[in-house]
Length: 90
Image 1 (cartoon, rainbow, N blue to C red):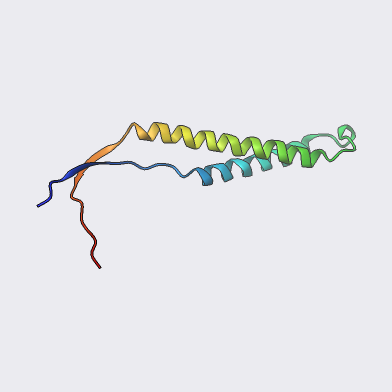
Image 2: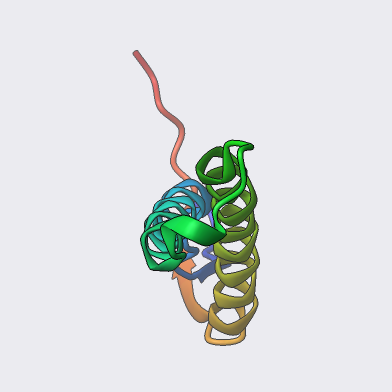
């Protein structure tokens, strides 16, 4: 008979959903900022495209950083359990 092993159980956040959420928030912020800028102050360059790229990538990066921070916080609250390894036979 096999003896039980001690295993760690924790929930880790998924990075991709946090990154995409951050990017969407950045794009929404870029659109809001573009609408706030008066028409007379807008330059001839495509300021909307620059805002979308800059704030979208900033939001993506902040989403990743937030997910990593959550992972560090949740890794401290690890539950331990005992489990017996089973061999799968087909």
